[in-house]
Length: 208
Image (cartoon, rainbow, N blue to C red; front, side, top):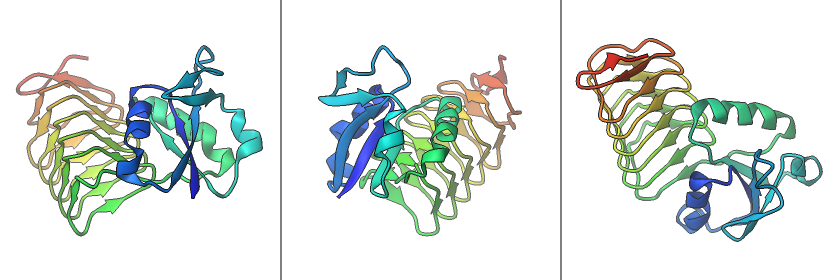
């Protein structure tokens, strides 16, 4: 049985803990790590909250970590801090997810129930795909990106790293979404989005 620590004592971490049996019953949940010092030493979902120093004396070959953080930028920062510890990052993919053959998935990926991922799609490391998303064929989702519930991506959509896609947004085929971009909820993407842009609306337009 592998030991598991959830990095992030928040709503996403709560989802992992409450539904761990859905993913894999072979994990021994040790607790949370959180960088908010006001949480350290307390309990969350009945489990202790540690600071990151806990890993200095408790890292073993059996230790796994799931980064339960929605913000793409924050996820990347945590992954950088955890590099010296050499821990494993398993994928947590709901059995209610439909994955076509020919899908490539990195590590540290979280996919909620009732999502669909079509053939020849590539999902980068530490991507989060929330409930009810539809990801078309030949889509590329860059590392650390987050898809909110109900996102619909048409075939050949390309998403660079650290993009944040809001609830129910959609793309037409062959749209490119730049790194660190933010897509508003219900937005309809009909044109490429440059890096570090915020877009919203139907059709989506730059607002920042």
